[in-house]
Each structure stands twice: as structure tokens, then as C-alpha cells.
Amino acid sequence: MSHSRNDQTGAAVRILISLPFLAAGVVLIKLHSSQSVLGILFLLVGALLLMPPVLSVITRSTGSIFFPGKGRHQVNLMFSIPESRIMEGKYNEALRLLQDMVSQDPKRLEIYIRIMDLAINKMHQPETAMEAFQKGLKRISHDDKRVLKEHYSRLMESL
Image 1 (cartoon, rainbow, N blue to C red):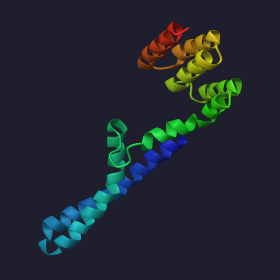
Image 2 (image 1 turned 45 degrees about the vertical axis):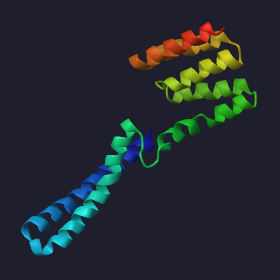
Image 3 (image 1 turned 180 degrees about the horizontal axis):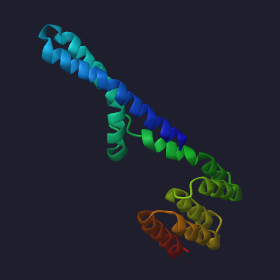
Image 4 (image 1 turned 120 degrees about the horizontal axis):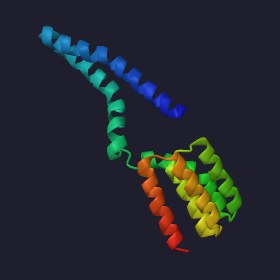
């Protein structure tokens, strides 16, 4: 959460710093045609300062053009330790780690899905999956509830 807040603060600072450069560039170009090169330089600096926050907003909804996999690595990294425990066959430890993640971020759908998958597919404990399902229904958003219900139904059908 604090990482996201730092990103937002950095974006706001960049925008505020870029505004005087953009304004100075426009003024120099409009008023002093002899100093238009300096005005263009100011506009360029302002635009370069604005580019990261603007691209950040665009890539959140459409995906990054320049770094296509950038956003997805953080999510996968978050689950790397529980996933490694699953691969080692340490299912109880993986479950405990995922449950700790739920206590840290109770509104995150993917954690509940991973707990249910682990409980059904590896541990063969439908009651653990049902507990995660019920907790998730109480905590996640309306749209995520639909996804959680569909996933839980598919898991139960696979038994």
C-alpha cells in the first residue's frame, strides 16, 4: 500500500514541477518569437516530466506498450513463496502463508482463489476451500464475488 502511495506522490510532484516548464515554454514561444528555441526546450522538459505519470495512468487500464509484462510480475512475485512451498509438497505451510496474505489484504480475490485451488487440488480438503469461499464472500467486492462463486462451483464440480 505504501509503495502505491509513493508512486502517487511522485506522479503528483512530477506534474507540479512540469507545469512551470510548460507555461514558460508557451509564454516564450508566444511572446518572444526570437526565443522560441528556449521555449521549445522548456516545453520539452515539461513534456518529459509529464510522460511517466501519464503513461502510468494509460498502462493501468490498457497494459504497457513499452514494458508489456511489467505489472504482472509484482503479482506473481507476491505468490512466489507459497507457490514454491506447493511445489515442494509443503501444502500446510503454503496454506498458512496464503492465509497470512488474506489477513494482510482481505479484499484480494486472487488469494481466496489460490487457497481454494490448493485445498481442493493438492490437499483434498473441500472444507478448507469452503471456509476460504465463505470468508471471501464477506470481504471482496460485488464483481469479485461473482468470479469467486464461479470458480468455487467449477472446483466443486471437479470433485
